[in-house]
Image (tube, rainbow, N blue to C red; front, side, top):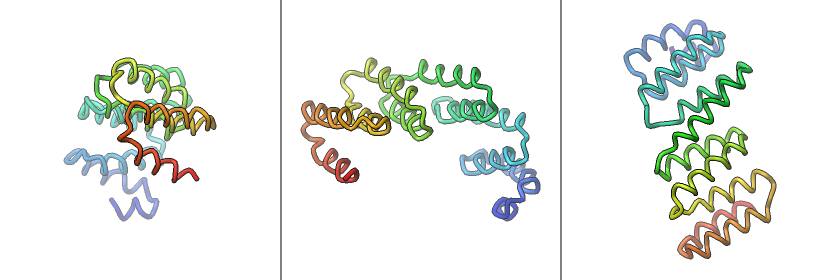
Length: 173
């Protein structure tokens, strides 16, 4: 499977990955299996496998988001919007989950959805400092002033983040 995959022979690799995936639905095998299916344009199978992965990882919204991005790729924007909205709606009282969903949206240039995720997280968990994430969002939006305000706001509330903020700003200079 890996040989064919590495050589771009996805039509030959897909059968092997299917067998491996059925016995071992790990993320690595899953990712390569999905790559093969996408390459050979077997979209029905892609959707089925993503949904299976979602059911195997109920507390991990990463796969649900992947389903939304898959729908976008197929130009099924309404389905994608519903998936993204449900992920944000279903966010739990878990700062790491909020940060993970935010990061996935940010990485995929879904800045409005990234902001919506942070806003909901901030409302649910007012005691959790999401200012670092807001700073990253504002930087991605090209709003340097708001980025610096977020860092200053973080330092005002949590001076112990001084080193983290210094390191973040050093990377930007």
